Image (cartoon, rainbow, N blue to C red; front, side, top):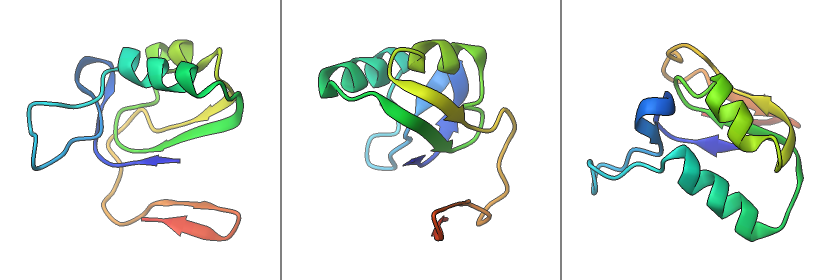
Length: 87
């Protein structure tokens, strides 16, 4: 589960207030997953705008399923996984 701010294909993922001009691009996420050597069952983004075909295509070698929103997510809703709520 990747939680933070998302900007979709154009802006990437993981806005950091300390480094506002530096989000992770899809290629950087793909490189990190490739370097891990792990194939995940599910990769989820609890972040706005990450449910795109480009994100799914990037994740295809590293995960069987993608859970993500193609819209803006409401604040404080989060995703529940195995009884753990990610807010």
